[in-house]
Amino acid sequence: MAAAETHHPAGLAEPGRLLLIAVALTFLGLFLVLPLLAVFVQALAKGISAYWAAVSNPIAWAAVKLTLAVAAIAVPFNLVFGVAAAWAIAKFEFRGKSTLITLIDLPFAVSPVIAGLIFILLFGAHGWFGGFLRLHHIRVVFAVPGIVLATIFVTFPFIARELIPVMQAQGKDDEETALSLGATGWQTFWRVTLPNIRWGLMYGVLLCNARAMGEFGAVSVVSGHIRGMTNTMPLQVEILYNEYNYAAAFAVASLLALLALLTLAGKSFMEWRQPELRHATRQTRDRTRRENT
Amino acid sequence: MATLVAAELRSLMPTPKRTARRHLPGFGLTLGYTMVYLSLLVLIPLSAVFIRSFGLGWGHFWDVVTAPRVMASLRLSFGASLLAALINVVFGLIVAWVLVRYAFPFKRLIDAMVDLPFALPTAVAGIALTALYAPNGWLGIWLKSWGIQVAFTPLGIVVALTFIGLPFVVRTLQPVLEDLDKEVEQAAATLGASAAQAFARVILPALWPALLTGFALSFARAVGEYGSVIFIAGNMPMKSEIAPLLIVTKLEQYDFAGATAIAVIMLVFSFAIMLGINALQHWALSRHGGR
Image 1 (spheres, chains in turn orange, cyan):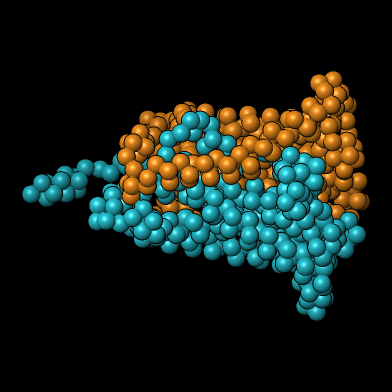
Image 2 (tube, one colour):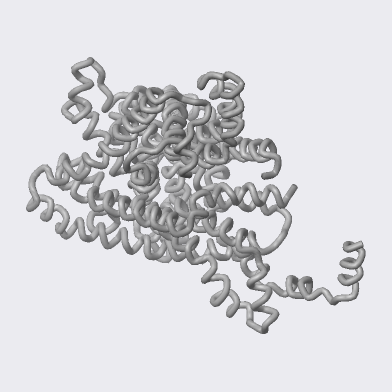
């Protein structure tokens, strides 16, 4: 890296280099730094006490609790799935592997609004299972289960796509050694595999959690916007904003922005400890393709 | 000679590796769980949209999709996304280039910040951009003196979609730029190529697949984007109403057929882009010669 910075191939002269750096930094400043700054400035526009009042408001707290609860359900679900999928894909050869990886990525290609719509079509009053659910007095849509389902859908690929390349890189020699020494399958998984993949696991959980807590479109479609009941933090931001209660909207938004900054800090820390995490997802496809050809 | 001996030794020895490999457990369990979970949460729910839309009949489907308001929203969604993705390709390339090749203060911090659009909830991005570009906002006030209004116009949609798509281009280009062989550029320079010539003839051809992939990823994400757009868009039917918002509007009016029909159009398009991206990466890989 240091060598890359000291000599300049193709000999772009100093002014050219400075111009490019200036353009890049201006663009990032306008599109990334200013919006982030605006969140905090607007949140504190009416003073610290107004900020505190907005953040400690019971309805805001209900939204915080719901957001945490939804993430606490959705992330473990996708974690178990991610580990299972990565084990099957990384440790074994089978036909249709790259199709399976594409299918796992599918939710990333779906608009969040459509992710909400599909659960309305399934569980809404006019949906496939609507009659059955009404008969048994179960609410899915416009209730917490719908929010959880929509969140699981939009965060579906995160952990799997981080774990697959990590497990592929580990190979299966360690596991085979443990098994030949008499360990059971589960012992091998807990004592050998899990320690090997712990960084990839935490990385995936971090990214999955950030999206789970911040999801707006999908959750908005299935939530029904019942205050204090089915409002997550992003939905609470929208409601306050549409009521022209800007300072309060930005106060709740600032909590989400802090979460985003913590996520970025955690992500950078993990990439610093484990540099191969950085481009992990790109390697999945490459490696799978290479094995297939 | 050595290979002959090795072959002979191998034939004499038992093959413990192979028996162990057969015993690595959990294939049936993990693949089975993966398939069931994937089907229940993704494949079956997604198929509901398609099956519901078949129920509409072709004539009804066509009527819904070609309604002027629907056409206008699709045109806007695709047009604004295209523009935003193009902006991201140009500036994303500059950002990636600068981050990979040059040294400057706070580079690591700035590099980490590029992922902000991935980490910041879209609703937060939406209200923040609106606050900036509203006629009385920090940037809006300045733009107003030039006679440009961004917030509550289609231009605002492009701004939000540019924000959302930026990391896709930068993060797709960075590893490719890092791998790029600088000796080839140096050779070009030694042979008398100017910086522009070296860029156009040596660097750009190597970047094409990554540029196209970043463009497609950014475009695909922008077409479906909802949270960051609805605050800044103004949401006027026929003017600044994006397709995902129209789905929500139709759902709120209990027009499930209409919502489903628009969703099908968008899904078909998204899947086409996804397959295109897969093909692109395949192409990139084969060009790299299996590296």
